[in-house]
Length: 271
Image (cartoon, rainbow, N blue to C red):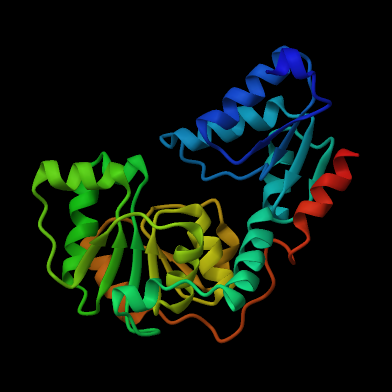
């Protein structure tokens, strides 16, 4: 495709395996690479995503960063040219989803019989949790210890491991099939609290004003933690359970990661 189309830019996003593949293919063909969501670091090389984002950043010709922290991370690695602070395009997507919901409200709340702020939303999908039985058991035991309903859209990776290991969950932990984006936004916005190992959901929780407990030992979205709206609980059962019962964020939230026009800024820098 790159050989036949000869694009002016190859745009890569985030830290997936396809992100790295795009960066490698384009750089070997001498096609400029623009990396959206550049400069993020968890400083945990056990995460495949960390390896992907580091290599992708060093192969990129234009680096579009969601935060000043990301710019500082790149500078520490000797990357300072063609680095720009733009925010996060997920803020644009969430703003669009919220506008759409005003005229096309998702029915997931009524379908699941849920009431606003009367349940927790949980997601677990990262290999560091699903491929480590001790970590996964700690997280699921915490879900069992929580006294509120826990809505758990189960990633196929996690469902397979849970079934194979015979890890039992109490009735208040409701395992449901994965949801589309609009339904997830609807569930997240109405939850009392979110438990997740997802980077994207950490940001969405912040933008939606929903407290977030991150089921990891570190996060690349450090600003959400510094703001007091996100906290790291790892996989320890007692730590997660205690945090669910005690976590109380501040009343205010400073703007983070963009104001809904990030995509336009990215396009402008490629012109």
